[in-house]
Image (tube, rainbow, N blue to C red; front, side, top):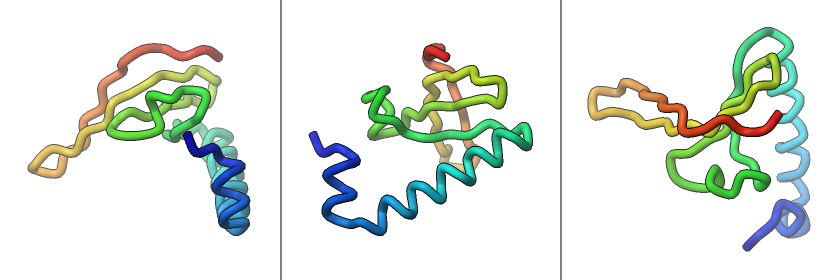
Length: 83
């Protein structure tokens, strides 16, 4: 399995991009907006339609996101994740 460190060694600019995205996510949470991301800690979120959804209060859930043929975004909570 490829790790983030492998990716950063191959493309050092990716680390800068990820750090900027982390800052943006932090700002969204401070503003009260939930964020979605993928995380190696939750391998099921690394591909496909599963993501981690984190709320400003720290609650995290594994969610499935699906775009319908009429462009509606559906979201289904699969399970709660640790805080």
